[in-house]
Length: 493
Image 1 (spheres, rainbow, N blue to C red):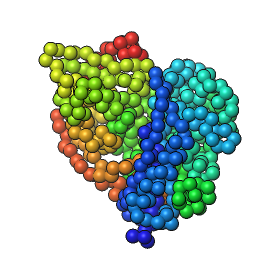
Image 2: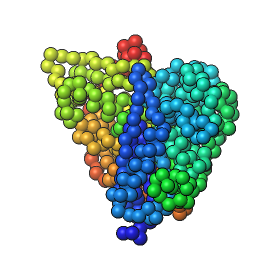
Image 3: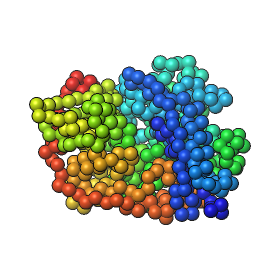
Image 4: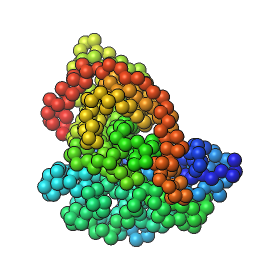
């Protein structure tokens, strides 16, 4: 076992860091170390200290190596996939000037609206970046910072995304990749570069930004002596550019130019996300038209309220999350953290259709249904952006890959199955973001395409398969009717 060559793929998410120790030849997951993060804030604020991410990375790597039983010298490369959009501002020593603004911090909603108008509307933004500013986009957060914490904005000598911050700590090189950069609002997918006009609009000096590597698998440097000592790894091993968490999950699933194209994925986590790797650059204002980590595109839609929102409803009702039944006449839109898709950043939850015979289990089921319908409506938009008709029989028969924590829960799986009417696949691999990051690390260390490598590792393993069931159009129409008719005052938008 000691003769194995391994790489480490890091998933630095909102809530925790996971470090997967992966056999670089076979893709076998040998161990996963974990360490928690701390998120603070209320009334729309969500912040974390980036130094906590760095300490968590060290703890997770140490735990993973210990579990694997392998010596540190077996590691040949490392890559970080991080939560998207977060804003990290650095001082001259590379230390954070303040806590990072996270993707789900909604305080920058007014700045997002102002930026959209200043450039000429949604279409002007999608023509350049593929995405319209919303509260989560980094550009909106930079504008918020300039208006609300001007000392930090003026003192910044570096502006980074979460994964950029960690990668720079590893290699001592300020670098990012097209995938994560495409979620900033100042990187143009149309030209594959930072957009000078957008930087001027944001009053953001390009000298503050990291260089954009060609792909997430590009070797941008080597592990520094200081970081090697901190992590207990060999100095000089390959450090990949890394990418955003959604882009890394796509690699881990074998989605991309050297793998599957236009195959949809639904991720059920803190947020609900639908995406697909495609050669088509999306300009639909309803989507985030991201770049992928491998040179293709990753059109994506994200809802803010998914598993955590439904778990909160279960807690309020005193129920276990699996103690659920179809919602009956009740409709519950669980927009507890505002909403991103549709763009209602100050929204709150909405409950209607209560009857004397409505049960707590039905109310929980209605929360599942409200969250699922919201993200599945975005799926239809995604498929159209890929040039597909979502109602065409051959497209409807294309399996929907279900990932994230919710994919392990009966309530989520059966709700999505019933409301989508599509066959489902639950991939065999559990830590897909970390696995994708490991493929980036292995490519940086030894060359080759990361998607092709992940495919050779078995990324296209179909895992558990569930046949399609007849679509529950009655519930679909009931929920969408409420969503379409609810005025912004009712939703708090």
